[in-house]
Length: 68
Image (cartoon, rainbow, N blue to C red):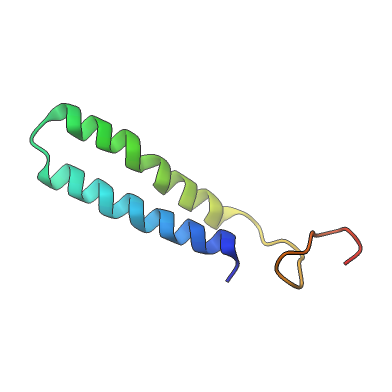
């Protein structure tokens, strides 16, 4: 698994857990709004990383299409 995929999975987990905690345990509309503004980008980033097509790298750390 590439580091990009790992960071995507971790960010989805952080986003879902944080959003669930904020929505379930918050009594204030302002805190819910701020929590949503904080944790939704984590979820969007994780989904975006998951949708990226794989590169043609054979080994991690080498640039694709540069003669490797």
